[in-house]
Length: 64
Image: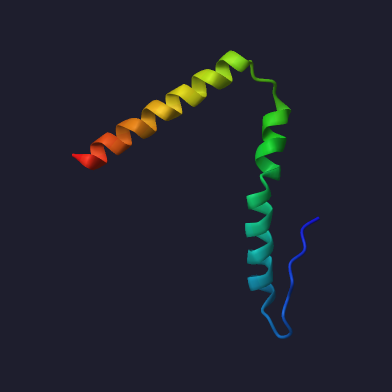
């Protein structure tokens, strides 16, 4: 359960923003989306590899 302490007189929008930030950090939505459809381990590994290659290219471009 996510608990967001709200100070007296604090704006409700600010409290909602805190809640959304905490909720996103828990990774609940990401996990739910991953559980909706099964993905083969080979596909998962391929995606990780492609992401690593992409990040490596970005870092190399940044150095130059």
